[in-house]
Image 1: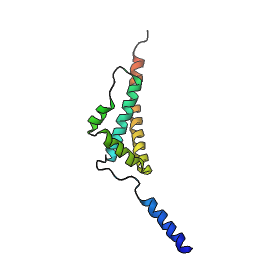
Image 2 (image 1 turned 60 degrees about the horizontal axis):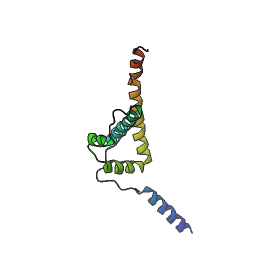
Image 3 (image 1 turned 135 degrees about the horizontal axis):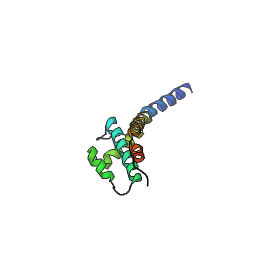
Image 4 (image 1 turned 45 degrees about the vertical axis):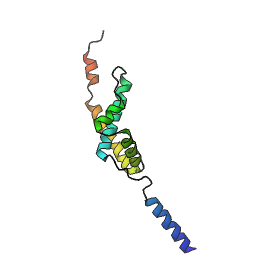
Length: 115
């Protein structure tokens, strides 16, 4: 009985240690993934702010030199590693907060005389 328990614990630990999702051939680096997510958030925010000047997500892929499949595979891979993915998203949040501190739109709107 003791041997079965040890065997089950061993199998459980080995099963948990394996990568569930294989590393893709064209994996985006952590820095590139962070930059892409920042740009994606900015693109999303800008399209919700105004619909007059639409920028497609395809231009974002071209700008970063990737295709949608590379992004999806990289995103899925990093999402399968919660600690690393959390670090990426925290970096994205920090960069966006940095942009918010530099935002001058409110100052410009206050400087325009109201009718």
